[in-house]
Image (cartoon, rainbow, N blue to C red; front, side):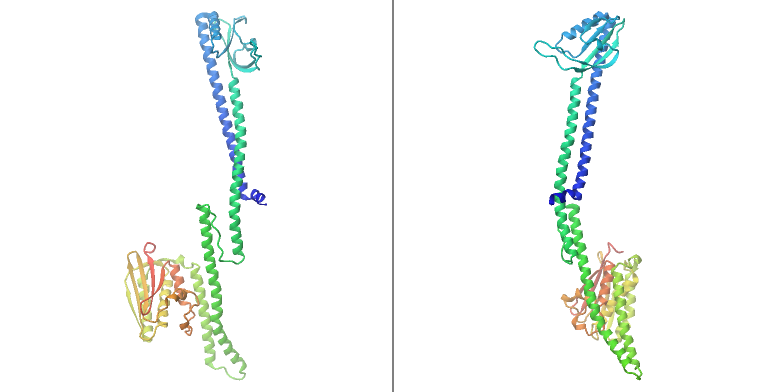
Length: 457
């Protein structure tokens, strides 16, 4: 049942906790207000009683007990009767006022007084009254009382407000918690459905936007980016597995045939060239595995810990000088236009490997008399390195593909390469945060690498 699922959900339990906290906080707030108001009212009552008692005590000092009795009678006769009084002489005899004899005490006290029936009105219920008594100069006592019935009513009213406020706030918090929990549960259910679909093998499925802006939408976007990356990696793994099987099948098959020939021809000495050819095939297999391992290690980020400022100009000059004799042996030329003193953050050995692969790729796929050029310069806030040739180039539709492992153009399937050279270049460029572009220089291929100088110095 959706209702019970919502009530059992984590968001509803969290909302329930907040409801309890709000209810307790509200009750404590109203109790604090009730206590403060009651304390203030009692303090005001006490102050008015002591003030009135002081005024009458002053009259007693000037005019004696008779003056106080006269003042009390005047106050009782007024329409705005704020106090009740009791005046007794030194013998305890009643002189003035209508407070009962039980109120005749020195200091503070609280008594209950019921108003007598008047005319056709019945007698009132006993009401609380606060009294203050003091001894008068020359003997006798004066007690002044004030009705505190309204103060008690105010306190009872505040208690009722505190109780119903707590109940009301708790009820509203529960309703709000249920609504919020229902919304969260519904949207999380859609998220769980998508995740279950992905776990079932549908890697092209994406989680829906939760639809609450802010952190939740960023969470959905980040999850989808993570799924894009996982799908890309899984596709790469499948492609690599297929390519490995395809590219290693031929050399392994040839190696097996040679070894079978060596076994079946009993009594015949194995020719040296057969063993040498078998060793060549084994070396080719090992080279492929070493290149795969190196690409995997670089893509995992290994080597970034060794990054430091390196002289890219010096690295490219060194590679250029090393390959100029090789190019001349093949009837080709390599020239350089390398500006000196250009530095980047990186691993010098990996950067040298990257330019070595680019030059070997150019030497392999260009005809005799080809011209290869290395260039390095800075443009505004960008460092640009280029390796260009005047060979056949790469069709625009294939330029992204040749950066994948084991990918070779159909026209070059007969070459001895395994299609890993440019994949290794791409891995090293990505590790160094360098942009990699393959373009056409009409005719020929141009490989351009660029670093932002805001990140590399």
